[in-house]
Image (cartoon, rainbow, N blue to C red; front, side, top):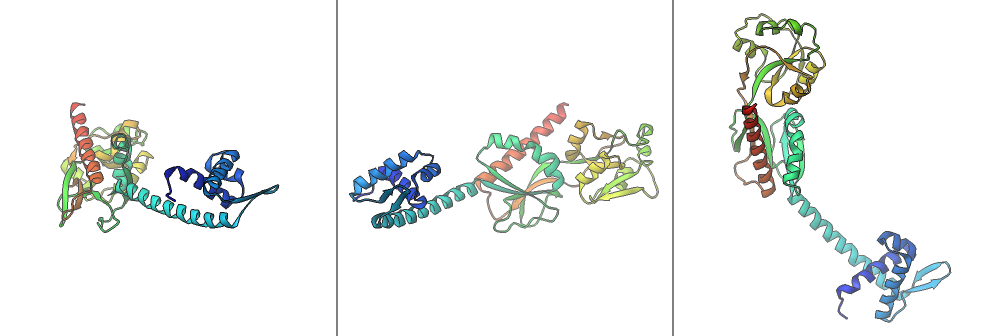
Length: 302
């Protein structure tokens, strides 16, 4: 007897009823009424010419033939479910893009822009890892990384994403900020520092301000933490342009007098030179490059 597609609803209803030994409970699982489950079972019994359930006052129980079919149906549906799960996972993983980047950039620049990525590529699924160590592109690792650096790394393809620049900022409520009129005045404030390769010494040198020992009272390993500390009134921070924008827009931080210093290191999209990006990852990289270019265009018009 050939198994046609119109047998499947009846077999699914029967398998659920056999597991629950109850038509009503099977119906709840399948979002059917108990009578609909009963109808499927009777249809199956009619086609097979056998009785699958004994009906009695307390409910139903399987006959010997019913138990034989229940075991086979359960195994078959389990196998189908396993295959469907693998196929579904494979499809989802095909559209999953893994990105590694710095916490500061993810928090202040990348994440606020991700709704635009979802709108443009609704099928893409993201995994974003933030870390300060250099990314290891191993099996199961990121498709690409956004690195802050010189733009050339052995064995990696690097695409310039964004230039960066440095300038001082502080909370508008920081004591003494009203007396800050020049770059030299910034040196009178308590200074917040991070572990970036360019710091206060570089900025004061560019501003032609000669100071002795700088009062770097608070040092944070993460640039975002340094900005949060400055916004909380700890002191003045030397901000990177690309990650301070939201703080300036909200008024939590204000820019202080003095020069804007071009960063020696900038942001790049990198991935192993020996392999091409998967289509989903390439789509995200293309989108990132477009967004970064649009930011530059908007900034030039403002």
